[in-house]
Length: 134
Image (cartoon, rainbow, N blue to C red; front, side, top):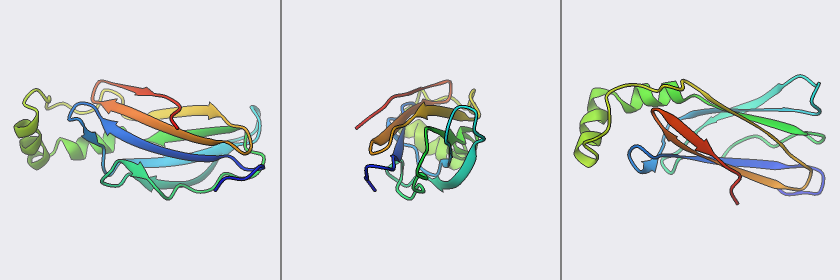
């Protein structure tokens, strides 16, 4: 949705340790209308096979700040199950057996009405990078 009074948000995740989209990552979206306002959880989603959340809720009018919380611990625990590990070792033998150093990634950013914000997350077990995409 793109209107003059509402900002919109989308995201996707690439697991750079295996060079593939990160599937089944729980993502929660929260918003607030001003720096002193309380955070309101709007909803949650899970990334699809392409690493995308296609069903994030619409932001309420008056939103000034948005927070995306990525549950990376759940993802890496699942990703590093024995079956997944065996498949990953075939494709990328350098992948480590350990879980995530960062059990969650919380990204907070400012928004203005009428703009769309695409926030990709580049993720690996020991680091991450995020940016405003298009």
